[in-house]
Image (cartoon, rainbow, N blue to C red; front, top):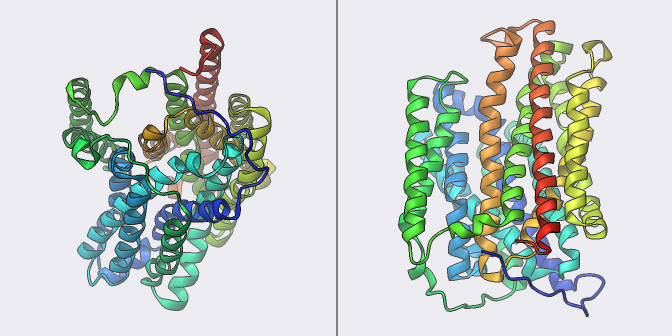
Length: 480
């Protein structure tokens, strides 16, 4: 099914109106909160273990349950926003995220904290699905790229800021402060969204009554099973992981069967034949898998390969998110100026070059031999994200923006989950040790070379997908 194309506003102002800028500020906060929510909690895991007297395999559920809820519900959140109104649901999502953050800070025990984090993940799914969907309602079409770049920038800022901000808050005010910080940010986001986002437009779709509950539950269960298969076992793939993968495969088959028969399906299967969407989702998943490799491999390489202290490792690792944050808005402007397809390919090419350097530079080159190609990789990632999101969302009909935005976020999350498990396992296998934390520098360096060699191969595949999608557009003469 091809998607209706919306005409560009020929009389659009060169710059967004003040209300549009305020709306974008609210949407940017909606991207900042979920990314800050996961990165700031990671740094607090040792503190939770001491505070609640729990082993690490229990404490890590503070992070896992957030990611599970976010991944499993993001598509359903996008679709529900299309049906009941994106502004209404976004305001509810901000309120839920903020309330859940307060409940996290008040948690008297680990069980309470994990349950509150699950609620926070539900709110995060709404925020991530609908923030991108609102861009088409907020800025003129010729400024979509820079708006996507701004949202990518704020997401990167949240990722980069989380560890350092979390450390400062825990040291100065105690662990509840890492959750209470979301209260003023959430209230500000809610106020900006309520005042400046456009009112919901009813399209006669039947509202929430037309929501595909069965399809949503099946998809959520399928994604949860897959995410658990990739995260449980600490890098070891056992019988439980296999059983969860089989459950995910069965769930996917049932989901497709239900969608084919549903009067108002969660995802119209014909939509997945759209070339730009198909290519965009596949590339996003591959690229996110590669980016997660930098987060999984980097700390061990810097610590074991170069003997850096924890603080120095954190400083070196922050270079990637900081560069991504700085590159986001310029990347969006390049997308508006040179076209989404061309800039997506350029971003992939830059990432490929960065990974080739990472897998070929000898350890004798020192920390700069890792950080500089990492900077190139993350800057190119910012360009790809802005271009890919713009390409996918540019021609989406207004009533479908929520579900398409949710699919983009889903592809990214699945890539992150897969990268954390598969690339981490590959790194350990290539290093030839079960405990990478105690491996010798040479073994860790070999693991890095193999891991980023595979990452480079994934990016070659992504470039091939980009080229095939562009060729399909030239043949058809239209987006889908």
